[in-house]
Length: 511
Ligand SMILES: Cc1cc2nc3c(=O)[nH]c(=O)nc-3n(C[C@H](O)[C@H](O)[C@H](O)COP(=O)(O)OP(=O)(O)OC[C@H]3O[C@@H](n4cnc5c(N)ncnc54)[C@H](O)[C@@H]3O)c2cc1C
Ligand SMILES: *[C@@H]1O[C@H](CO)[C@@H](O)[C@H](O)[C@H]1NC(C)=O
Image (tube, rainbow, N blue to C red; front, side, top):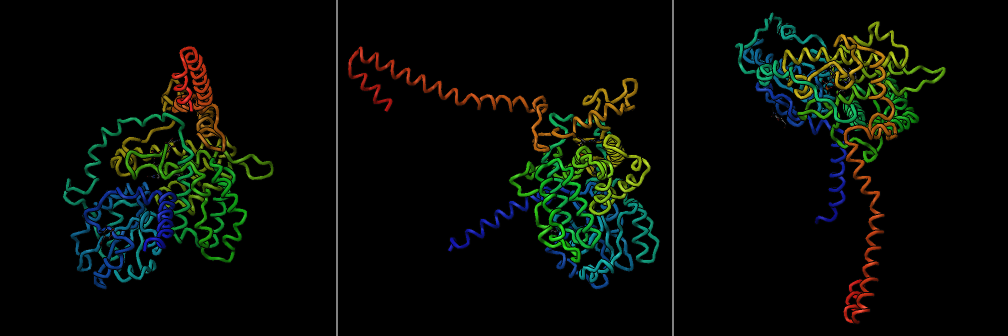
């Protein structure tokens, strides 16, 4: 019988739709660099795969997330490392090398309490099966030079392991081929945005993704410190999120925070984790697809780009409140909480942590110095990544269609750079530009306002023609009716003159 099953079927379809909306990375996670050496394992076949190994089998497992830019950067390196290790007899045996995509296998990675991505775990198969991270060696957040990794693996076997490239030129997955394109690809310019520089959908998307990462990673929602940090993140959104939906829902969660996550409770209860930080999807601009953060490949840009947009827009929205923490202080608190507690991209977190602890960060006092500092910091990151992309190829960390550049481009803001030097910035002009580009009402739908200036941007002409057409509809309707009446009356008059029969025809046609 189909009938009784229908409602549950409907429900599961709508749940699936819902999950896809809220967890866009599970949809986009697939095309991460494939490994020819490491076995890919999932939550479903983890036990089965490890059960086939002996009790003294040593395993090296990489935990990564396909949304994490640093993981993409590390993927070809890990492939080289796996190639180097695969034929080595260590402790008399070959290593079992595998990897897990934590963007998909959230339960498995949650069980291992992965400290941040990418992370390498080394240990015996039974200890992996027991999901006991305390019995495993973890390599995470350090320098990931391959010699350091080799030393770390060597130490486990009480031997010295010297890394060497396996047969220069040997195919190592995508790394060699992507490197070859580097020089021509770096010559490419980043496309100028045809409309607003950022989109409400993408800041909402990053908000939802951050929430989902937090909700599915036990170590991110356990303990008093995380409880306080999460409250701080909600306070930031409640004060300065550019989406009115996210802003008001963060406010709602805050007002019942002590009930949703009571002080004595070790882990955040499901009711809090499953609540929607931006309200029901119907009220959002985010529809499961990136807009201004859309990459040319499914796994590029997206989340991390949305995070930047969130940070630049929030920096311009914290209110000036007499007596309370100023916008600069409030934003610095938000950034520190986010970076310390919830930024799962390990190298990003390390670099950004250093930036946050620098004297330049301490010199931020007001909204202007805050926004300019964040802009400078973002350009520093752009410059560093430009170097990495030039060295390893775009496919490892960036998007070949969006090469890293100093922002804004000269064409976007001609006065932001001194006319006599392409590299000297005019900070007053940059400050004006930042306010125009990221300030209140600078993207459609943001802050609950649709600014007039928006009509001067890209897609506006189409919006205008269609809306003019729509406003003409009633006029056209009235005109058509009048014309019809006129024809009927005139037809009757003519037929009245000519004779009854044709008059009958007209009036029956009108009926
Ligand atoms: C805090 C933070 C730290 C990060 N650290 C690392 C790291 O260490 N290693 C790593 O591989 N990745 C890191 N990332 C990710 C990386 O910076 C990019 O987000 C990612 O490579 C995608 O780049 P993108 O081309 O989409 O542009 P993004 O750099 O993400 O920029 C998004 C948008 O912001 C605007 N923009 C660009 N530059 C500026 C600027 N200077 N000021 C204002 N607006 C600007 C542009 O409109 C751009 O499209 C970090 C991200 C964040 C949020
Ligand atoms: C485990 O499952 C994944 C995803 O279905 C598959 O790609 C992989 O080959 C499997 N690995 C093993 C070792 O069975």
